[in-house]
Amino acid sequence: MAEFLTKSRARNIFYGGSLFFVVVFVAMSVHSHKYVVQVSTAGMPLSEEVVLGKHVWERHSCINCHTLHGEGAYFAPELGNVMTRWDVQDDPEAAYETLEGWMSSQPSGIEGRRQMPYFEITEEEMRGLAEFLRWADQTDTQGWPPNDAG
Amino acid sequence: MKYQSQKVALAYFVCAMALFGIQVIGGLLAGWIYVSPNFLSELLPFNIIRMIHTNALIVWLLLGFFGAAYFLVPEESEREIYSTKLAYIQLAILMIGTLGAVGSYLVGIHGGREFLEQPLWVKFGILVAALIFLFNISMTVLAGKKTAITNVLLMGLWLLSLLWVFAFINPDNLSLDKMYWWFVVHLWVEATWELVMAAILAFLLLKLTGVDREVVEKWLYVIVATALFSGILGTGHHFYWIGLPGYWQWVGSIFSTFEVVPFFLMMTFAFVMVWKGRKNHPNKAALLWSLGSSTVAFFGAGVWGFLHTLHGVNFYSHGTQITAAHGHLSFYGAYVALNLAVFTYAMPMLRNREPYNQVLNMVSFWLMTGGMAFMTFVLTFAGTIQTHMQRVVGDYYMDVQDALSIFYLMRFGAGIAVVVGAILFIYSVLVVRKSEVITPGAANPVAGE
Image 1: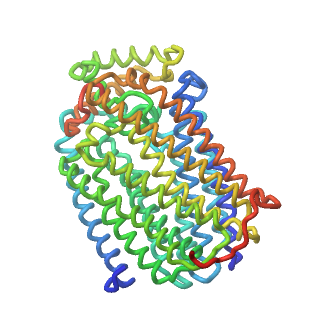
Image 2 (image 1 turned 30 degrees about the vertical axis):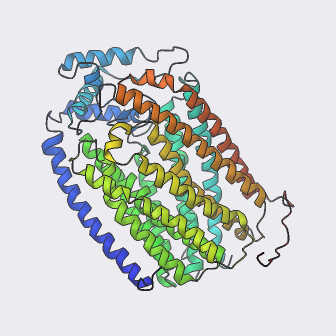
């Protein structure tokens, strides 16, 4: 490596440069935080039902089979747009009924087909979960996914 | 082994290898469920097995890092560890926490943020253990000699421990949840862990090749500078489609493209040091793992990362088997292989003997590396087809998955090779056989022809 780049110069560039990028990153993160709250997720209130639904989602570790906005395991379908795929995004009651119908029929037991477990979920929780998925679906995700298949 | 207290590393490495075993068996089970989906479906669903697979991986890699730090810091600082008792307490907390987490997953108690599913008490346990570690190792370094290797290693370990705080921050807003989740996940594996990796690699190359310390340490600072300059804003490549502003598409694409640089430099560094070094170190297996780690990390993290990091590509490939392919090879190359390099290097010293079972160890390298490469290729093919059928044509997810079954079968075969390799590695490190499988020739330098 060139002679002008001594060890102490390399060290100083490392510390100084890293600090610079940390500051830029923090500033952009603050802006992003505000953008999420005020713009991209503002289309639907973050109601108690939605929050309950998120807890149900987490308690059953849905993310370790499904993806949500493309993140998670890749074993089961994308759920960030599932309400659009089911054509119930604008109808909370239909969203609940469709979800309830799907989940109560699991596991399918069909041989050679991936199995979704049966989950003990109360009606209130199921309504919350449906609202959570509708809430996720209305998030402005820059046009992703490319189509309804998710 | 120059310092008695380095011995604590032995316990860390043994525990790490036990969890390594659990991890790969979990992976094999999960791989089999892809082939035969009804297997265990009522008893132990896929999501539980996957949590065990990923969590065991993360903890054993961390145990390896901690153990490596306890092994190399005394040599670098030229003094004993501040407290070996604290080191053992730290290990006990981590093992109780990990086995507790695995146990609670098996009975269905867990969180629901990917990789951070540990029950709250385990998360606190990890925090306490990390604080004990930082205190213990910092006291050692502060009282002794400070080198670039310990500087970078400590900086990486301090920052990764601080970032763990975001494991406790889970906003109700899903998009915010995801943003802060990446503060742990991305800034671990694509920033702070790279510091730890580079520092450990520098230590290994210093010992194995005998190149001048000044040269090694200058390389080290350049590598970690490129890692953080690219990796911090490179976080943006995870922010494209989760509800964050559109500018991340450009920031993420540009900076994450440069994330290839530190991995390319680490690979170059390893080969140049071996080229320049005059030392004929007897531990050839450790050298193979060191070179192999930096090479596979370049392909897994660098090449396979770049493959789908540009936002125009990622729009179609996001969350497909392409991601799975990249995840497997990058973790294997960068962090698994590096840890196995340290184990291979340190274990003979920790047990006060000459390097042993080197042939078996090197066979395990090729088995695991070959298996992981094959797995990565078939998942990449699967992901390419999936991207086309699902994201371009618009076929439904499960129909597409049915079309990919041949790749999942081949992936399972690759998984068997990896598991056999892992078992062989653990055997070769833990069981000292009387003689080598193949007797090495005499070290007889000849003049070039």
